[in-house]
Length: 104
Length: 167
Image 1 (cartoon, rainbow over the protein chains, first blue to last red):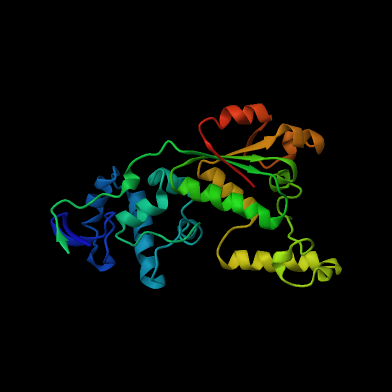
Image 2: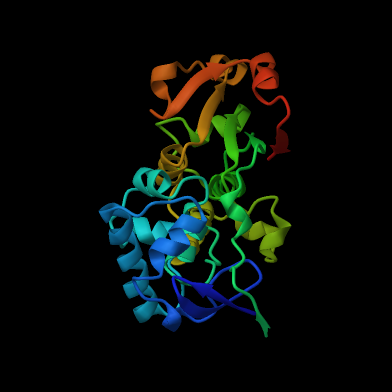
């Protein structure tokens, strides 16, 4: 585990760079995490991130991409456009959540 | 704990030139899912994906059959029950319903929806020309997202430098 400064805050991250404590995340951190992976956050990104955060709060684990699509109501095509190539991992990273474990 | 100023950035920021080609040759429900799951997982990892449906695998993209794939007891010793049971009328339907229920519990979609998800994620679907001809089908009989009916030689061109999985 590593402590790093992200958006002026001291945060703990794992070897890959994912936040290890979702509670340390707030909305001021997301833009810096997004920049790290080459994304600029739009309102559409934020809608997905807020769904992920609220779903995590109620379910206790990072939503699968399918769940973001079926429960969150974001079409698969849109998720791949917003978070290209590795949508599930990228959105979890920017939302300060653990790397998703599901295969779907 | 290590103290650093700059946080590590996940490797997924880098792009991959990996390409995965899945040959789906089976038309049973249980043998449809390995290809679908792997294709979807590869797309989620930013890998280019091509699925080539051949022989009985064509049932996965045939509009008439894709929503009605079955799994059977017969010849499947992994069911760990007497094989004679497989011949009982209605047993294939029962086994299929049980498998579909378990798949649904895990929140995996049914075959047509799974293929749509793969296509929406940028996966490419191809039908084998020999199989289409052999089964007297036409392109219009196939799932909308199928990009074309191609021969084995075209598949060879398309799969150049890719990794191939035969199911």
